[in-house]
Image (cartoon, rainbow, N blue to C red):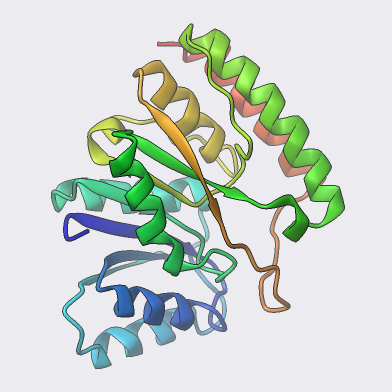
Length: 235
């Protein structure tokens, strides 16, 4: 995994980002941490960790002056990862709901299946019931849309999972969209490029220090962004 880097968007994650970085340290995996204009002490925690980090893994920080949203954070992190020449890019959240310890298992699945991307699947028994319903419906709908768009059958069990490993060759000139549509838009574009996408189960922890930024309005915004991409930005 020496050609791998983890891109981590972080907004007000002073209570969580240290645990993410420590776990990645133990795995000796490089990371790009994008502090998306946090209003708490996230920047200080990252700076202090880098200053005192004695591990071999590299940590590239990106500090934004204002909050620009998850899509933009992932876009900026991806551009830096591509510039640095990494072969594999991992996406995971900075709130420690995703566990870095799953990365080796996901990467093994990627190699074993000779895939171009592996998407994490959260087990439903660990997801709040209202999210199970919305996630199931979104996954079914997006599987249909992606299959029609790419003219190839794709079936996703957890399209909204942000924990993924993708070969960097498929991420050149990708449109990241706005807000929380990024997972859906990346899946659309990977499928259009005939990427082989597999899935692997991951751990998920909805702990008290993790704050969800998803609202009903944002869900509708995601739907509009996907429709806009398919109908207007179709490649």
